[in-house]
Structures are given as C-alpha cells and as structure tokens.
Image (tube, rainbow, N blue to C red; front, side, top):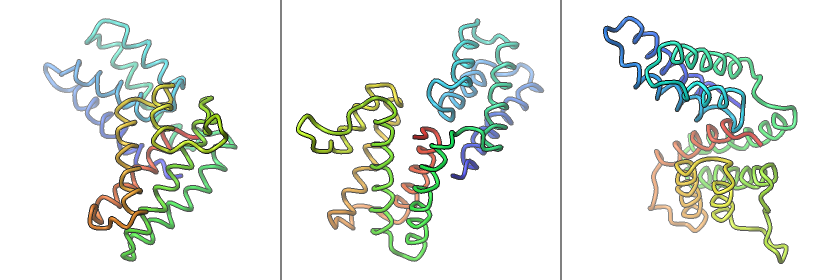
Length: 210
C-alpha cells in the first residue's frame, strides 16, 4: 500500500523540528510532544520505533539530547516506510488484496458512485478488523459460532490494545458511514466524507497491518 501519506506527516513534524533548532528560544516541549505522537501514531504497535520513543520520553521534559534522539527515531521510521520495510510477507499479501479494493472504491468515487464506494471501503475496513482480531488474539466469532459485528470487534480490539481510544472512535464513525450507505441512507453523507473514508481506511491499514 501507499505509505506516502504517512511519510508526509513525518516530514511535517521533522521540518518543524529542523526549524526549531534555529529558533531562540525553541519550543522544545511542543516539538518533543509532536515527535512522540507522530512516532506512536504512524508506527506499528510494539515496534522498535514506539518502544524507543517511549524510553526517550522518560528523560526530563525539554532535554535537547532526548528530543534530537526522538527526531532520529522519526527519521528512521520515515526511511523504513519509504523503503517498504514495515511489513512482513504475509502482511504485504493481505495489504495488496485490500489495497486493490480501495483503489476500486476510489475509482468508483471519482466516477460519481459515492454510495458504492462507501460500501466497498467499509467492507475492506470490516475485513481488516477481523484480520487484526486474529493477530491480536481477539475472537472474531461469538460462542455460537456466528461472526461478531464489526462494532463489537472494534471495541474489543481497542480494549486489547490493538489501537487507542481515539482510533476506536474514528473506526466507529467509518463503520457508521458504511452502514448508512448499505441501508440506502444516501442523504446522510456526502462526497467529501466518502473520499475521507477511503483515505483514512488506507492510512489505518498502513498503521495497523494485519
């Protein structure tokens, strides 16, 4: 999948760090917070990047050396994203399949079929949640063998630490849009929301490969 949106986000915060070096006095605490947040948001859970960032933030706030080290972690993350080193072979195979469906959704949206595009993007998201559940050890089926609803999987994945509460709320909103499209509630959302859905689902899958 395209890692370019994540790389752009890292470039933004790294450029802010580079500008801060020449600022008197620089707003080190703000830069440190943004660097840490970017690393945690854009790297896989329990990755070396996230662990190093967590260790570095244990040092006193505003320590220039620790902030420079955080910037180094962010640059390493950016380089590995750009080089395609962030996924296993299995994850790449899964990503390629669902990336194709997201491309299909984008093409449909671009041709004026926002409702079909929303359904396809939402279905990709739901399938990805089931893959994430398998990876995180969260049961994707109920005791009677019937599949759990995506909304329940979302809550259980967040509780299991697969992603944070902010992302849980975002997934809830994406699933709600998908349900509106599937139930012909076409006036409840617009073209811009569908475009954002496709983009955000793609970014979510990059941050949380399965």
